[in-house]
Image (tube, rainbow, N blue to C red):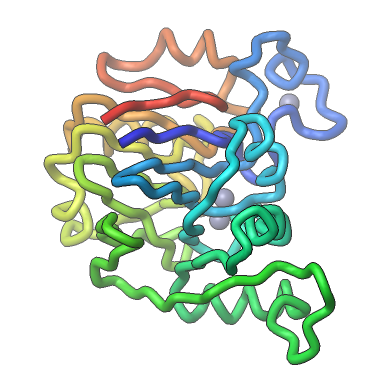
Amino acid sequence: MTVTFLGTGTSQGVPVIGCDCEVCTSADKHDKRLRTSIMVEAQGKVIVIDTGPDFRYQMLREGVKHLDAVVFTHEHKDHTGGLDDIRAFNYLQQEPTDVYAVPRVQASLKKEFAYIFAEYQYPGIPKINLHTIGTEPFKVGPVKFTPIEVVHYKLPVLGFRIHDFTYITDAKTITDAEVEKIMGSKVLVINALQKQPHISHFTFDEAVAFAKRVGAETTYFTHISHRLGKHADVSTELPAGIELAYDGLKVEL
Ligand SMILES: [Zn+2]
Ligand SMILES: [Zn+2]
Ligand SMILES: [Zn+2]
C-alpha cells in the first residue's frame, strides 16, 4: 500500500494569502502546503480521503488518471471544496465516483453542491454514488476502513485505520476507546496545527504526546499552519520517530 500526502496545510494553506512571515516567504518547497488530503493506493484501488479546494491541482501534480473512491472525514470546506473536479474522473472512467460519508456530511454536501443532487441534471456536472458510513468498519472494494471517531471542538470527525496505517486530521480530543482502535498501527498521521493553544486542533505538544502514547514506528504530522514554523526548523525539534509530512511525500507500507 502507498500513501501520498496530497496536501498537508491547514484550512488557509501555506503560504497564506497576503502573509509575509518567514514561513510564507520561505523558498523551501516543504513550506508550500496545500489543503490537507491523502491518496491511498491499496489492493488495486485508488482512494482519496477528502477533496479540498486544491484537489484539482493535487490530481494533476500526482498524475492521477484513475480514481475509485472518495472518503470524507468531515464537511469543512478545506476538506470538501474541490469535489466538483471529480468530473474529470467521471469522464475518463465513464462512471459515477463512489463517495463515502456519514449522513451529516452527506447533508452538507447536498447543500454545498446542490446542483450535483438536483433533479434536473445539467450536462457535465459531477456524478457520484453516495455510500453511507458510520462508526463501524466498512469496505471500499476490498479495502477495509475502520473509522476512528475524534472530536474537532464539538464536531465529530472520522479518522481511518487501513491495515497498519491510521490517518487522523482535525482532532482535538480522542476517547480512550477510539485510541484502542489505533494501537498497533505502524504508521500514524495526526494533525499538529501550531504551538499556540487552539480550540479545535492538536497543538504541536499535544500531537507529540499523542504520538508517544500510540507508539507507532513512524508518526507524521499534517494540517500544519504557517504559525508552526519552517519545516526545516521544526523538524530539528521532533523526537525520534516523528516527522512533519510535506506535500508529495509518499509512504510505503
Ligand atoms: Zn481542516
Ligand atoms: Zn505566514
Ligand atoms: Zn475541520
